[in-house]
Structure formats: structure tokens, C-alpha cells
Image (cartoon, rainbow, N blue to C red; front, side):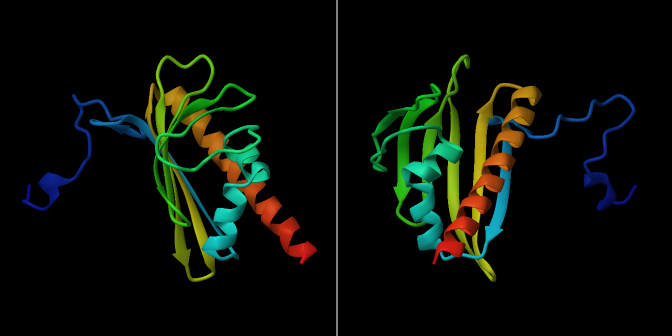
Length: 156
């Protein structure tokens, strides 16, 4: 076998394939990205508004996006804001009711050719089932954000 092919990540007959999304350091993780035809400022404004937070975080009257701020949504999601770079990034702990420990959620706003890419990344998930549940959650959130942004465009 050549040196190049010996490094391929192909499990052998006696090796089990590593589950999708499993990392050595952060447990299971998942990421969902969508690009929207809006500026980063418009995307940030929506994500941090009560209407936008309802889509991805839960019902909160407001949230101070500063490190150390804590939150609990009406739905029971709770955690702490860890990092905020206005217009660019939010990193926070995020725990749903019934979970034994918090996960880490990072939302990044990336400049794209056709607008802004909103990236949801979540790590420290317990298992493959929780990963799949959260993948569906973030995909639905991205779809709802698209609907909210489209509705906002039609009003301008």
C-alpha cells in the first residue's frame, strides 16, 4: 500500500466506523449553515430581536448579549452568554429541559457573495440521537429565519 493511501480513513474489517458528528474533544456536534440575501447587520438585528430569538432560542422578552448574561426561555432553554462579537458571533451554553448537561452553541455571521451566511454550530451533545434532534432543530430554525427575512423584505 502506498504512503498516500495508507492514510485514508477507511475502516478495516475489524474496525468500527466512527459515528457521524463524534469528536474526541467535544462529544457529538452538528452544524447547519444557510446563506440569506441580506447584510450581516440585518441578519444580526433579526437574530437578536425578540422575534428572531423566538426562532432559535425560545420566547424571551429580551436578552442582553454580553458575556456573563444568563437566560431562561419560556420553553425552559437556559444558559449563559460566553462570547459576543457584535454583528459576527455569539457563543453560549445552551441546555434544554431534561438534558443532564449544557451544550455549547456558536452562531456566526459570515460574509457571502450573495449576502450573509448564518452558521449554527452545536457541540457537547450526548449522543447520535441528540445530534439528529438538534440537526432537525437548527434546519427548521434556518427555514423560519428565511421566512422572517423574506417577510421583512416584502414590507420595505
